[in-house]
Amino acid sequence: MNTTLDTTNWAQFPLTVNGVNFISKVDTTGSMYKQIKVLPAGIFDSMNKGAILEIIGDPSEMTYDELVMELERINEGASQAVIELA
Image (cartoon, rainbow, N blue to C red; front, side):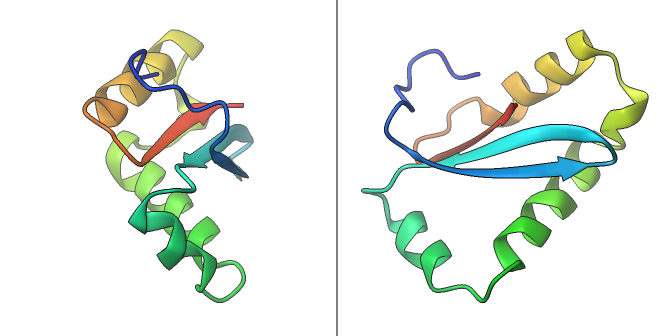
């Protein structure tokens, strides 16, 4: 997780990819949140699942440590959204 971001008050969108639970967190004061809120039901969830599979591969085939390392890599430099293990 990006240790410089305080995501305590961010909106949380739980999702499961191949049996692994994640939480997509989005800054409610950022422009991305406004766009997400107007998406039809299920679209943001599908986008997150697709991104996880495309960027890190099948999470069910990875160890916990591998998942943490990959999530740190993809969240590096994030300012409005992150994906974390649930």
